[in-house]
Image (cartoon, rainbow, N blue to C red; front, side, top):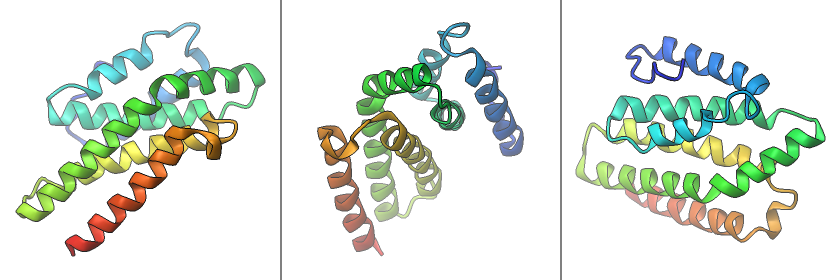
Amino acid sequence: MICSLNEPINQIATQLAVLVSKVARLDYPQFWPELLPSILEAVKKDEEIVQHRALLVFNHVTKSLASKRLAGDRRHFQELTANIFNFVLNLWNTHTQQFCVQVVEGSCLALQILDKALLSLKVIRKLVVHGFKEPHKENDVVLFLTVVFDRMKTTLELS
């Protein structure tokens, strides 16, 4: 399932991401421990479509794992959040910066980069809401909010 990250058709890629997330909800981490490391590896690849599809899967898996309500599952999601939050924050920040540069240059790649930034932002939202007991006391979350307002200001100045 995870091998089909180069699916060119958006609707099929979305359905594959949903399918992976449904299986992950039941099998991760006990029976599928390599899921998130392989998704994060794919996000780091240079291929545009693989990176986008990996972010799509990552978004759906995060959404699915965040919806688990048992105490052990919530604790595991909090540990996961502590391990990956900075990576996802840097990913979102990079895509947002690239988007601003592409808009200034008038590049047609701006929308693709914006989509990746949006998927990263959706993952961050789930991590912040469900992955921290008290997000307002976490330095990384406060940093994220500061950067969001800075990026918002920069984006508004582009128009």
